[in-house]
Length: 294
Length: 313
Image 1 (tube, rainbow over the protein chains, first blue to last red):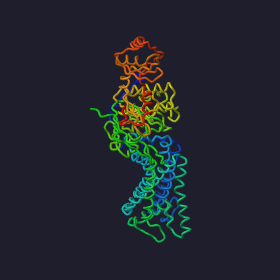
Image 2 (cartoon, rainbow over the protein chains, first blue to last red; image 1 turned 90 degrees about the vertical axis):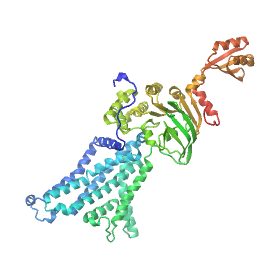
Image 3 (spheres, helix red, strand yellow; image 1 turned 90 degrees about the horizontal axis):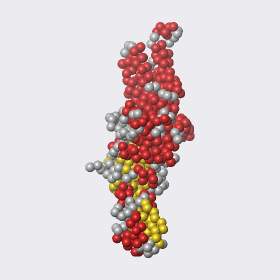
Image 4 (cartoon, each protein chain N blue to C red; image 1 turned 135 degrees about the vertical axis):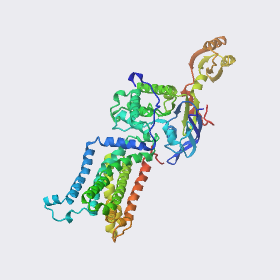
């Protein structure tokens, strides 16, 4: 429209389908994130360990390189479930760090300037809003956890031959399942904390604290009461239990209970409860209008 | 037949354990509705209820025949909302912010971009559209909020205190824009304000709230038509004979003592006839104020009333 023809015109064009509109939030969030050099640097650093893991797999399956490097012990270079547990633990910790940075950026910008009523005065629900933001973290954290892990699994399968893939195919399910619950828990905690405190820097700090303080309190509880159930407050440890049991033997994924250890179902239950609690906070805080009681 | 713009049926809204809106009942049929009331009267609560932000504890509210609670999503497809408070994403450029909001309303990305530019130029922020919204002045932020409210071409435009924080020229420009938008399309307008002039200049019908109750529903078009000739006189002489003579001409008179008389004149009577009657009866007219019943009168009258059955005056 020419500037000299300033006139209000009603819109008569087509509209997009209603259900995928949450992707608008995801798309804009990614555009904003990739404008930040610090984020790009973090993302690259998050992917770098996978290159070392891939190099290790290559050496483990290449006799010529082993001879050149004068490595004689074949067991030292075995790529089995334990190796994938290490990959998972490293990458999920990296995911935690990335999540601490990205999560608050997604929500605090909308909340500090009261933009939420603008979203919610459109045909767009609070659930759409949360799903749109969760999709950002889901895609991002997947890209540095289970996706590279499966690529490394594929690399190992291709290089090992001798039917390695068939004897280890069961690993795919626990890799995806364990990563999914970790990603969901991290994302929901970070969105809930950001919705609660609103300020980005503070939110980043609180996300850190929300992992370390409960773990410390749990250890205190264990020391005072002479029990081991305080470890339920250590979310990273709960995830470790789930991953280790999940990747050691598929038949023991949901049932094994060792002596003096937190049972796997309890670890799953803790992570699911944290997710539900985060959803509860999001439901309370993400409102178009805040109501002051009294 | 087009449904009424707003229908309220015993609407009661409770927030934080307090009843904010007390059983509002009324039908507003005009295309441009003003929402008036002192601070805390419940204007913003009513708007938030119409948008589905608050659930009614009793009764219902309908906009263009759509129930605000039951058909909230469908209703919000028709709505463009300009909130009262700061509502923006500070780091986004103005045009990107409006495009973002238009896309969430369902416009495809290329159309949203085109409409965002159009809306920004239309509200007069064309030069500032690439600046982050956080750097805008208060008046510019108001205009940016208006741009995001109209970019997707809504059927109902809800403006909550649109002229807040604007200097007189900016306010005048915004009021002109609102009137242009109203006249350029079949858009319905709901404007909430405590500034009577804003409502008077843009609206055809007004809903006046007081303490969460309807103090008055008034059709301004009819009021303007009905009270075209309204005189306030200060006289010296025999008031009774003077007013009796005026009443024979078809005027309605009210005597307030000390020579003060209010006269509502029918269309057929000219002011010169009043002077002629006064001269014939030997009454001196010391002061004459010729005006129509303004919204201010209606508002003050509504504020003074202790309770009106259906609120209509």
